[in-house]
Image (cartoon, rainbow, N blue to C red; front, top):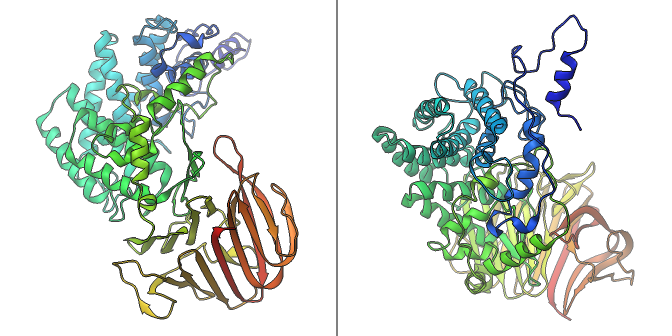
Length: 625
């Protein structure tokens, strides 16, 4: 296979009247040599903690050989748009620098002159994109963007550290140092509303700049910028964390950006500047996390209460997450925040997974384009101290819904209610009030201590929310649903906080439908009153071994579509039976969707749908047979 640059050079030899111009080169002559193809990698030659570098090593030559001679990373390997003005595309300067600087038995590119030339060109293109005020663009050349500047400070600082350690490219070192000072001056300015809002719009992007600035100021101390950084740590703690405990992303919570991006960026910052605000933020978020990751009793891992997520749709976390793991650096806070151990891979399990990787005969193949995040590599620079199994088990036992069998936790922020109700036979979640466009309101999950998760709502999906659905697939959950809470049945004494009542009521709705929910020890009763005919829609998570039967005797086919005329159905999972009853026989359907859960894909989404004429009364009873 020929590289893009080789093909362009060949085209330049054809007898055409117009010279070939490589995009982004402004007519520059070809000068970058191709990297030689990589021989087959021996998995056994990689130290366990460096296995994450293997697929990046396999990707290095194809990625470099796709570069334009201007230094632009063409080929679409990282970030979009894959355009010469997008500074984020250039973040792989760190990857090139690391492989150039680090000699390993498996790294044939260490000290490679061609790779250094490519790095030099890539840095030249990267720095040419910086605006005079220090910011960088992403979506158009004239943009002064937070994400390209924040993440860019981190990648450029890490690259500068490598260049100084090797003595390579001294001219670029000076340029990088100057670019970092200008970028930090722009980024740390509290009057800069692109970087700082109240509350923050994209807290992960702001955190990335703080992590980069912390390292840059270790490399080149600057008292004025250091004071600005200290002030910025306090500012992000005040404006980036919700009173509910999550980090702000588009006015709300997003599990992926909070747990996989923001928290690791705070950890990265902590290595260069152990500001106490960082630990406090990690502790506050871990408390929120502990209500929203649902542990499966069979040890598969955690399902995500994803309905409130504003930007992405991460649905689960496996019990063992081998490399590459975007959450790996979160172990940084385990000593100060022991509860966080519950959500990390135990060191013994990670060692087993890495031993299996090393023993595998499968070839190491290049990463898929766009799935090449250099953060995986940068977060492997600080060593590892994952919790051991015993520490992890202790943390899991301290999760609020495992530690206690009776509580109501209501967390609020800016018109959003995050509700968690625990009773001896169930754990129920809800998300009410205002919401962002991808979020879905209403009841969001139902979990049983032995059976695990039975119901789990997806975000950004009108076919997978626990909703009253009107014709045209219009669910009430795709919009605001303000709620009131009660001691006992809805309509009685209003609950405003404090001790959990023996029976807990919820009333929520909009102009078209009102829903009452009564939660007791092992039962949920949901009563719907709509102004038109509608359908009750319940997003189930079923397992292949479940025995699911309608009350008329019809057996539900796992992974298929089953219709019956019945007044209920039962899910039998091990010793536990969950009974759904709706009183009046109706033509109900259980239909499988394409969504699966966990690495093995055994669990599968199924939607239960029961049409009604505007009133519907459902009772769900969770208990043993």
